Image (cartoon, rainbow over all chains, first blue to last red; front, side, top):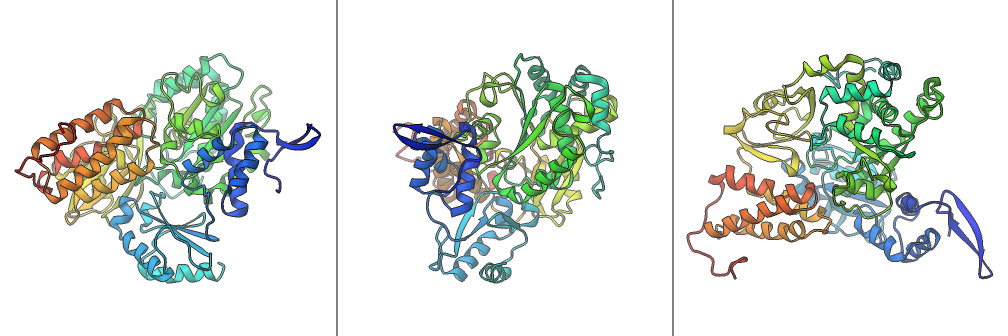
Length: 161
Length: 402
């Protein structure tokens, strides 16, 4: 496994070399972010490894990963599209936008396309109500996404923009 | 600062760093007194006096203290912090530095919601600039005994982390579950040390107050609510956006600013706020009337208010941390009740039961999420009676009476 802790210390225990995080529990979320940024999700094995290095039980890591909706414990598409479903977005027609994405990608909300490129999700308010309907493409906030613009967004992702 | 926005306090003109210099001139006690006297209340929605928080943290005896900027803006319909963090970055940092100086903190955090990750590089770059200018780091503005630095931490899409104790739990690397209060974070916050958690907007007010004075600040707004509120307007209107208005502004005049017409209802305070019918559009924004974190959502006459309540309840169901019973178990019962109401199958007696359940949730939930989850339901039932019909047949099976 590549480096997950920003500060590491090596110790020798029971005849083995161990690498531990020279950081406290409070670094757990930044560590999880680094792992997810690299792989797109946090596997069981990652959780075990992180727990070992921080000296906590893997269940504690699991409990944190499952609590936050932006942390994934399952493989995701390389791009995650999140359609905001807060009330302001609904008023602006976000359900139609979601349906359009579902139609174009041939998947349902919560699923990943066959080529593992795109995952479609719904999310609570993303703070773009003044530009509703709005979506997130990975970390990017995109406003005023009308059903007509859906094709364009997907095209942009597929072309690697 | 070059900004096109105009407003009475935060969006008014100010020269960068002047306030910090003034703070260093009047000293710690001076700053604490000014903030206390200004009657500045927390802008996140709860409205706790910032001066009280600061004074308590300042008097706490600990060598490690923290200042946290709460940028976990999750309330549906709020986006003012997105604008502030992007356009008024230095102002917010300056507010944090002044706060750190006043309470004696050496380290600060900005807890940035995961949805705003695209702002993260901008914040880090601004901090790097400020370190070069000796505004962050060791010996700020050549004051040997004043060192302070800020770290940006990202949230991961959990609404409840906007609650200050949940936010601290999250900073410590735990699930974002609210703690029991007391003890308050000003005594035992991050890793058990005194911690002040302030909203982005509260901190953006600080430099203005320090530089322009208590008298000036108190001349804006109303007697009990000094200053201004930055509101995020969205929904059925022509000009959605972020506006700064003095406290005491009526809902009616906000509708005018946003160029809204044919308005049936206004949701003030997001999912946890209240829904006002036309007859109450004369009510005022302020801690003495309708307190809000700034979310204003406008509904026109074609909208179904029961659908809106349904959306909010599902939102709370999704975001509830599940720790305490009234919130975890209450929300699904309200959702089910709302379904009955929609179908016209809810009778008077059951509706009364639901309202008493709502009251229990408001009183007995552990944190603000559960306490405010039933607000919209109650608002719609009370204020929009024409939108639903009660069933005349009493339901045979009743949740509370078997």
